[in-house]
Image (tube, rainbow, N blue to C red):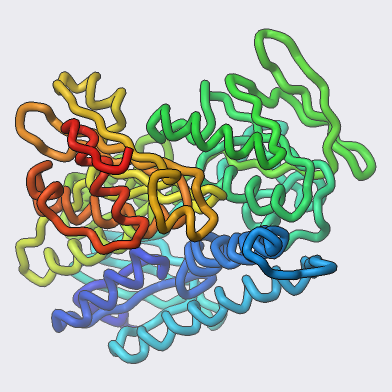
Length: 464
């Protein structure tokens, strides 16, 4: 059978791949996309979206317990874990179906199967009907990543879970250990802790949420501890002894080993790129620690071959993958797109309280040699935050003292994952402190704190 020919083939239908395919089709390219499992990839099916659905349920549950504070009555508050999970899976299914619809709408050929690059511009796809050969001048690899598993800490779906098991729990943990306090670990810790699990978080670094600004991490930790979480920093799980219905964790902290028993463990110790079985090395693609090495335009060095999203390295974020997909499609179509700047991509963590940031932390700005001005504003000084019953939080801004450039912004508190985009736009437009100070923010809103934080950096804060 003759190979089917396309202008562009995308391997992987996650938020990088399907967006690349759509943008390519919009630009008049003949596009095919190959997916081995789910339209929408990990993000829509097992990541960003279903976790937010779970966290929304726990947020509502938390608010119901606070009903009296708002002059309301809510007696006999409880939850049905199966129903909570069913809602989450339903949301994921709806969005996955939406991606399939978008493929059809944009006349993109969808091939469900496992792809291997057998030569330059040549793809062999194993489908349930046999093997199909596809060719294209341009191929985009968007195969994403999966959970990293450390020796001795491997998931079994019963006592030790990855994020997939945690999204469809076979039981409600009573005593939970979460290994790793990055976004995935702390979000699951927040969800299960809110629903009543006795939760312990172990982090090998010196603080939780280690990629965030140290001040924000410290604030978040205080809130987690207030909610009943146990946080163990500069600690490492060395061994898990699995018994009947229980796990004994050997935790090294301060040079000593502590043994603690749990009924459930969630391992959230990072990710590895899905680079195996694609035939990348045979084509001369350079792979560094399970990630494809690319230039700023996601080119692999092999003519016509690109890699985007998680497989192409940090930051491992869906919105970064999507924008890389758009950029690559425009490049293939003959355009001149701007490269994606990792330092201007916001990171959002949907624990309670939420955490969001963009750009350099205070420490990183100093390390880079900047003379800086730092502003802060607490949620307790904001009328809307108090009216919402969410007075715990802060916003922090870091500026270059010489030029007024916004180097970084860091937030912890209610809805900060929505607020951060204001500073992202500011950085994209190369806004200075003067522009931000002269911007009128609506009242009463949480966004007013963004203004006040900027004012504070220049000793002009009003409400503090």
